[in-house]
Image 1 (cartoon, rainbow, N blue to C red):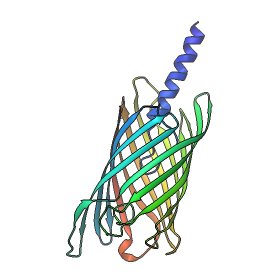
Image 2 (image 1 turned 180 degrees about the vertical axis):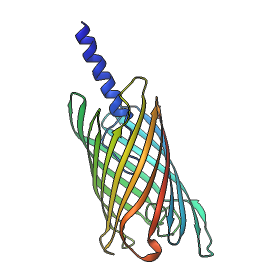
Image 3 (image 1 turned 90 degrees about the vertical axis):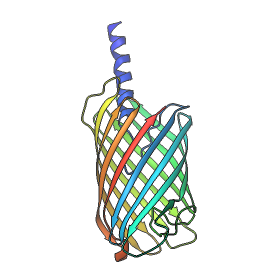
Image 4 (image 1 turned 135 degrees about the vertical axis):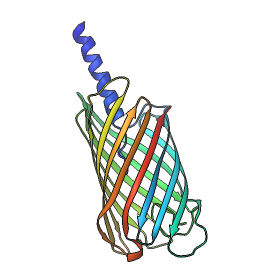
Length: 257
């Protein structure tokens, strides 16, 4: 009887640990919560560029109809402070509508590997600033695959996808690689600190521009609430001078209902 209780307790704590190690800060992972879950989150980006500072503050609502599917809407406000004397320094950004479907899952003792198909439809509701992932005012369609492995010791996530922008030359091939490292043993209720090491490679196919970004982040999960912060800096950027980035600061919160 004690052995059975021990096994059940271990499985429970392991499951909680996997969910406590929340999504990577600047990328994604295929781990999903239970069906019927609602997640409200935000991830503010303050981007410092050669031209000026751009800020994007989204309100994101995620709903899981089932344990292997997710639909979401991201409503962002955007701001800019640039050297040029320009109008429209703030307003509604490009709205994202996202859907995910988990099509593969293999669980082991204290570990899991999963794969998810993902699409994001970006609506042209934002300002025509021509700043990707901040505000472009162009419709875009993204399709990708997210694959990830997690154990109670670490997590690895990969994402490969293509972003099609019919009205411009900003078609983009994207690859993201993230590593998560829990700093505390799994507990119930959840009380976890995670470190994240994340790489983001973007190749603008038609313009032949390339960006390789690295983000260092830390995340604190307490019960249903998650707080996170990350700093992202370019390692390689072969883009126009006015589009070059100095760094980005990410500030996020997440609550599960």
